[in-house]
Image (cartoon, rainbow, N blue to C red; front, side):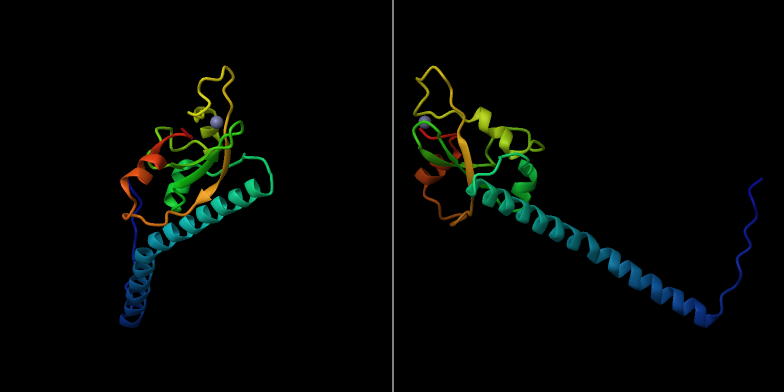
Length: 153
Ligand SMILES: [Zn+2]
């Protein structure tokens, strides 16, 4: 037998108070997910910026933000430079076939330079920095094709 719950009757004033509190809590609950999403996006963007600055001053590539986090933060273009020939190119992370939950620095081992592909020893490229997407829909087809390639070529 379940325990019997006796609820005390609320006065009209208490009932109105709790209804008001409940409405306020429901409003806060409706607004919070968007604010949480915005805060995560800002945090991921800050992490991407920190990683770019660390690359600029010659720091280690790892730890790095996850690919999904970088895409969510709007950091979709990654500048990559070949260590051997120095050719630089942009990698569009939204088009890369690689697990999104992996950190960005794991991409270096699967981005061989196409200009150096005849060499026996494969050289991993340097991941340089995030680059802003300047013209989201105004990209000419040639630049878009260049950005989608894995590494220089
Ligand atoms: Zn190269």
